[in-house]
Image (cartoon, rainbow, N blue to C red; front, side):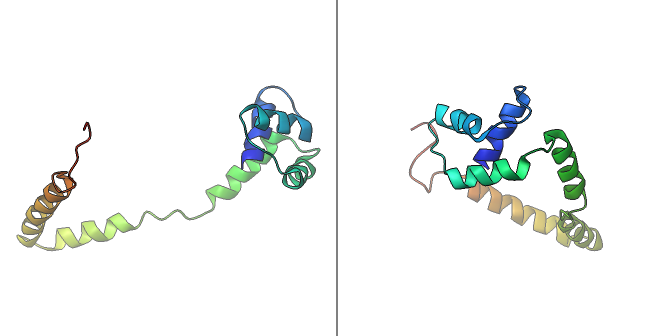
Length: 112
């Protein structure tokens, strides 16, 4: 990731085809040691390719990846089915949250 990040930073800076030495210089400027085999592999994979096209292609692929989000529907359905029980559950949850938020049990405060 760090090699790709340095490569992309160089691309944003105007260097449309950064070399391994360019990426190495960026990483060493912030104290990161480089592994030449990994860096060489990245440069060979990206050689001759446009960064913007690669990002657009990757974004299209990520758009098709399912990303969950169904967990909230089950909780809402269960709450709508009952009458007084959800109110009692909400009170119990509030008491539990208050207990969890208390830092008295830990023996220290945020600003100690």
